[in-house]
Image (tube, rainbow, N blue to C red; front, side, top):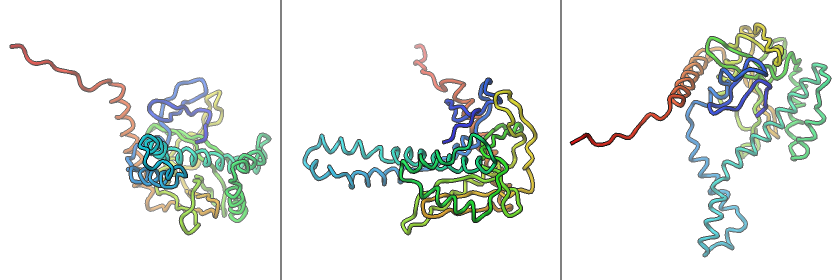
Length: 281
């Protein structure tokens, strides 16, 4: 995950502050979306079973309960390792996309070559190559990259990957690094990205200066396309959030924001139960 200057890791998830010198005040867009419960136990079990079955030491451990238990413990963390590796890869791909955008904007600090080298070190340059093809094919004209926005009314903040002009339309773009399906195609983007995009669109302010805590009115609340761009090593696919679904996804995001608020209130209230002795005789 990228680390915007105003984002903080807290016991209540990722939160944002108004300046680099102030305390965090509101949850991030991704923290709010993360309140939705998802059952990943089946996937975790599959990852553990696969890791154990593919372990080269398995045959040699048959008949030794102690050695088998050690292999089982290692296999049990396979899902966690896969998640962490995927997150690190996603950070590298996002970094490359950001550096390409900054270079296109003429920013002196842009370093796409350095970001490409980081991908090369991990054998992941195919992601960058496919991204470059998409960037040229779609004629992307970046307006801003890694844009931090804030909504006071609902109470959240977040950082958008890219604001760009594509085909004559202003687009809010969120990049998603994807693995491959069994037939070698990029895996589809999860529909929860619509909540992420519509929350970005419904922001009220955009950050100007993080140190000074300067914000200005967010100009992209209307007449923008919301695009999710899935980047895999085989292809890049762009999908648009349909205008007809924006309202229900926004209402769902609002409801999840209330879940986050009440969950924090419950935690801050302290233990909910206390022991009770028997009544006096």
